[in-house]
Length: 312
Image (cartoon, rainbow, N blue to C red; front, side, top):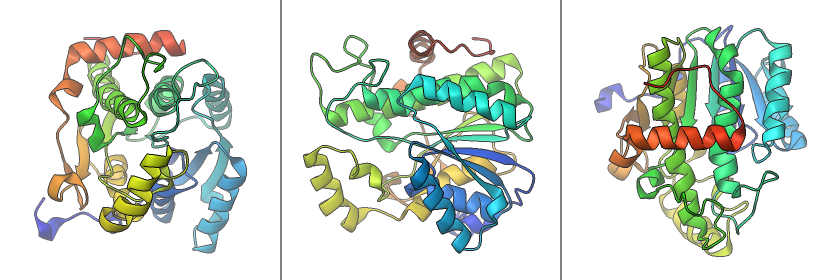
C-alpha cells in the first residue's frame, strides 16, 4: 500500500447484518475492534472473562453513540476448556450463524500458572482456548456471510518455538519465552487452519493479524514485575501506539472485501511496530507445514476438539 492509500477504520464497509465474536473485548485491542465493528453496523458479542467489566465496556460504547442492540456480553474464560464449550453451546442456541470470529484475547508473561486442565496459562489462553473455540464454532461460521477466523498473533512469533518436551514449564519457565511460544502457536494455527479449510473447500477463511507494539493492559495486568517495568513504565510511553491504531490490522483482516485466506496483516512501519495495515510475512518456522500438522494434532489431543476439515 502507498501512503496515499493507507487504510483507516473509516474505510470499513457497512457491516449491517453481520455477527462478530470478539474475545477479550472489554479493553485494549478487543474494545477498539468492537467499537469500530459496531460503529459500522455489525452486531458484536463481547466474549469476556469478567462479565461486569464487559458490561462496563458496553456502557462506555453506548455512551459514545453505539446502539445498545448491537452489543451483547457473554462469559468466556479461555483458560478453561469447559468454559469454551459452554460459550459455544450457548452461541449455537442463540444464533443460526456466525460471520467472523476474532481470536483476540491474550495473557502476557505472568508468573508460571497452570490452567484448570493443567496447561501453562499462556499456551492455554492464547492458543488452546482459541483453538477449541474455533473448532466448536466452525459449523456456525460455515453458514456465515463472508465468514472469517481472525487470529491475533504478534511480531514476537518470530522469536518463538514449540517447547514440546516441556509445554508446562515445569523444568524451566521464563515468562517471555512462553509468551513467544504462545504467539508462535497462534501463527502456526492460523496458517494450518487456512491449509485445512482450503483443502476441505470450506467457505471460511483463516486470516492472521498482529498489532505491532501497542500499549494495552496486556503488558501490565498479569505480567511479572520485570515485564511490567520494561513495558509499562519504559517501552509503552516512549514507543507504543494506541489500541485504536493497533486494532487496525485485525479490523482490516475481519472486514476488507476480497482478502484471501492465509494472509498475515500487520503495521507498515519500521519493524512492523506501528503504522497502517499491510500484508506482512510469517516466519519460515511458523509457515512450515510439518510444524502445522504437529501443533494441530497436539492441540486436538489436549483440547478434545476435532475440526470437520481435511488435512492436505
